Length: 70
Image (cartoon, rainbow, N blue to C red; front, side, top):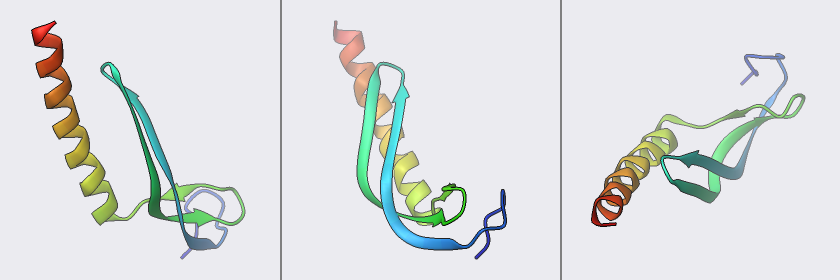
């Protein structure tokens, strides 16, 4: 697999995923990912992206409930 940015070789590894959004900070560790050995660009697989998106939707819903109470 080649990197779309620099054409370097992609290597399977694990990494972190971090996002700051709508009043919360999400930090996930040990997420499977392909990382470019040349430029460091990360590519998450479809399954990982789907799981992260589901987690974010759930978290946003729960955070909005807390904010409505306060």
